[in-house]
Length: 239
Length: 225
Image 1 (cartoon, rainbow over the protein chains, first blue to last red):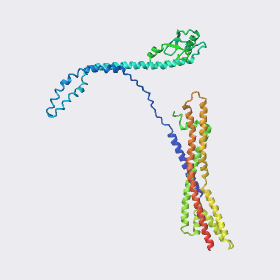
Image 2: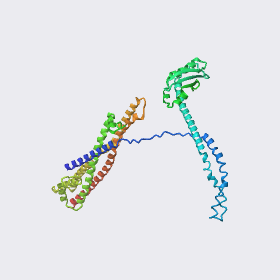
Image 3: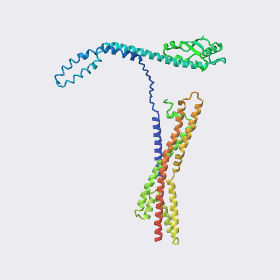
Image 4: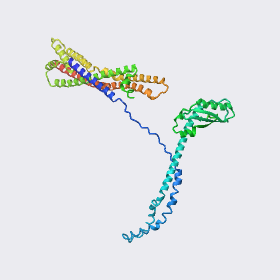
């Protein structure tokens, strides 16, 4: 009786320990969370602006192609009816409508001499479009950095108590590509020197627009930020 | 990432209290599985010997012979111990001098069988209370560890300037291990407790039925004589 009991307990302890060891092993081996590299696709925005292409490419081929097919309807009916009479002598009404649809497919091969010209036009239109896109892209970049500059200045601008709503001061700020402010000068005074000075102080207080370093395209910087004109109005803190 | 979130480092970096909770739950799980396996083997064995003894008993074997067989087997457990207790008491009382009332003999026999029965019931239900308490308490212990761990994770977060998910995630993950362990210990214990208490009940009621039947046989014998 006693030995039988001990043996069931031994079996039980062994089973239990093995089970737990197995579970721990499993946990340790399969613990690592699967790392699925999630590919974050950057949003591609396509801006389609084809107004120049439509105006230039479409009307051009028309006038060139039109006059050419004109002589064809004359030439075509002649060769076509010839092979026809042999197999089908009786159903004549068929060849009649044929000459009419035939010249139409011929329209495409005809303007071949103009193809190069067309391609050139297309290329120039594409280049124009690209340029336009690039320009608008630059503009977009510039606008976002403008917002950043406004924000920084607005945060640092403490308006004098003498500021009035209709006051307006225009500053010329010179920047270098690191974002450092080189000089600030008043282009158009508001008439209130305290107000002018507070605006100047705000720009000096910022001192350096860190984010401007991130502009990769030096052309954008030269175009929009090297000499920056800022207008200060007290009403809504919009510069 | 790899060494940040491995199971061991999560457990090793946990608070002392959470570590203690985990250790407790781990041992509770080990012990409860020992009980589960042992009880499973015991109850299966008990049901088997019960069937065997009943077959033997109702095969028309001589009761004296059966009594000696049971004693020779060595392990007197289950139904045979009930039978032996009853039969021994019956013979002892019946063999006394004639002025023993048959009802007194039956009373003594039944009493001794009842004692044997209650001993058997205790044997059948041994360790089941432990399983029941593991089943009901270990989720709470695990939850306590988790709550404590999350509490600490958020307390640590309060002092951080830039709070990101990555600063709390290890703490919460580590804390949740405690709940997982609690559930891991509790679920088998609940299932085993329910199953084993049901089968222990059914075995015990078979014992009771047998005791009744056996006492009716003895009753017939003492009044028939």
